[in-house]
Every structure is written in C-alpha cells, then in structure tokens.
Amino acid sequence: MSIISIRNLKKSYENHVILENIDLDVHAGEVISIIGPSGTGKSTLLRAINYLDPPTEGNIFFKGEEITKKNVDIIRKKMNMVFQNFGLFSHLNVMENLLLGQISLLNIFKKEATEKAMRILKMVGLGERAYFYPNKLSGGQKQRVAIARCLAMEPEVILFDEPTSALDPTMVSEVMSVMRNLAKSGMTMLVVTHEMDFAREVSSRVLYIDENTIYEQGTPDEIFYRPTNPKTKSFIYNIRSFHWEIKSSNFDYAELLGTVENFCFRNGIENKIANSIQLMVEELVINIVTPIHNQCDIKLNYSEKLDTYELTVSYPGPKSNILEKTEDDLSLTIVKKTAKNINFEHFEGKNIITVDL
Image 1: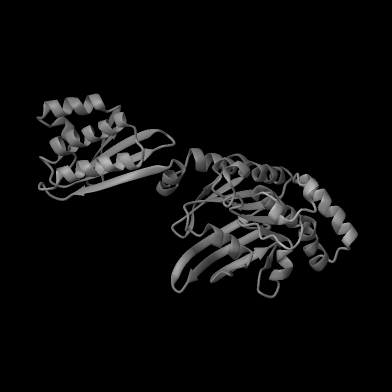
Image 2: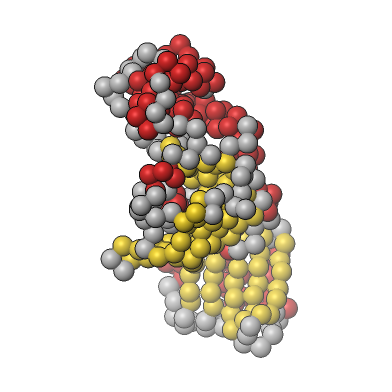
C-alpha cells in the first residue's frame, strides 16, 4: 500500500488554476524529487499534501486514511516539512528548538527528549552547537538544525521545500550531504529542488511539473537522459529558443538578422558560432527559402548543457526539398560548408529543414 496517495488534486486561487489532474502514489522508502520551472506549482503541491494549503478539489490519503481538516494535526506528526527559510525560533537555542515539539506534541519527558535531540544533532554534525542561538549559526547550519528538529518528531515522511534555495552556494553541500544520508537510511522523502545533481543521483523517481500538472515522471535516467516531452527536454537540456515567422516576401531581413545577433549576444554564444548562425540564416533563409516561399517559420534551439545549436526552417506545401532545387549555388555551397549536418523531412503538410551547427 502507498504511504501517500493523491487522487485528482486541483488547487486554484480565484479561478486561477495552479495545479490540476494530479494523481500520485508514494511508496515507503522512495525519494521523489520534484523539479520544474519557477512558478509551476511545485511548492504548492507539497503544501497541499501537508494540508498547509488544502487542495481545492481531490483527495489525499496517508497510509490509507484520507487527510481532512479534522485529522491533519495528527497526520502531520508523521509527515513533517522542512521549509526554505529554516523557521527556527530565534529566542530559543538549538536544543530548545528540538525539544519544543517533542515535549509539547509527542509528550516525551525532557531528559529523554534531550538525549534524542543530542543524538540527532551529532548525526547532522551539530553536536557542538547544541546550545548556540540561531543568530550564531550559518545558513547551512540553520537548515541542518531545521532538519534535525524535523527528525526529532520521528516522521515517516519528510517534505523538503527547496531546502537549499536560501543558502549561499558554499553551504549547499553540507545540507545535501545530510539529505543523502537520510535517503540511504530509507526515509521517505519528497523534495522540491533545483539541485539537479541530487535529483539525478539520489532520487528513486523524478517528477517534472509544468502546465499545471505532473507533465512527465520517471526514473532519474529516464528524465535526465531520455526525456520524451518537449518542455521536459527544454528544461533538462537548458534549451533556449528563438522563433521568427515570415509572412510575406516584404519582411524586414535586417531586423531578422539583428534579432538573431541579439539572441546570440544575450545567451553568451561565442563569436565563431554566432557568426555561423547569422551566416546560415542569411544564406538559407534570406537567399534560398524566402525567394521561392513567402511564408516560413524559423526556430533556433541552443542547449548550453549539450553545447548544440539547431536551426529549423519550415515552409508549407507538398514535399519539396528546396536545397535540391535552388539555383543559388554559392548560397547552397556556404550552407553545406557551414552545417555539421542537414536533415530534410515532410510532416503534416510542412517541409522542414533542420541544420546542426
């Protein structure tokens, strides 16, 4: 049986849909990383699971029991959450932060709670700072205290909401190390994260959130090395796109070339490649395609991660490879010498020329 089951979850605010059609089963011991662009509802999903922000529609079950407003406080003891900004009580020292929930919610005597807290603090490398106040700790140490406080409540599931996003980059590794050890111990974890190395190396499953839903999910190998859906590919491979539509033979070709140049500059594309891209647009689009076809679409995809540059030019009509029919031998020679690879296909009434640079 799943430890968490979500059925047809929807979350909206004043008719603005944040999430919808969410179905998910989480099994004990799984580490699920939730990735995707900012603003797509990743943190909202965690808050809905924990009923900090109850769903607009749908049902959430914890170990077979539906979560409602009546029982959520009981279930939260077993499904705890670690936030971006630590949430420590500044007027309490580290030990007191860990004791508070144990004594007031778990009804553990202070001596036993203190012993357990010290064991956990040592586990996260903070035994020597048990009696420090939060203002004497670094950001990474504060987040480790927050994780320790969570563990002191003996949860069966931990929800991590971008636990390293508020940290200086030099402090990220210490928090990720603790989380890796938790994963090895068999703790069930759902982690909203921008740390792709963690998601790739530690997760048992990765969810990519986009278009208000779980857009794609799979093993780390499937998501990071063999994504199938366009937006997943664009996110994983850090693909930046340029699109231009030509509607008539009277288009402003100088504006097109200037826009291409600006795209290359904004994305830090090195001059040699940028010059090749501009040359390809000029020779293929302006000198070969548009003199014959007054309408065409141009798309340039650049992946910094893969170090790839792909220019696609498509024009409507029956199957016709214009590169085989052009009379502009000079432009055709330049295109062939500049391109690493050229591919032609006819699909759904469009002729598509794809050039790798």
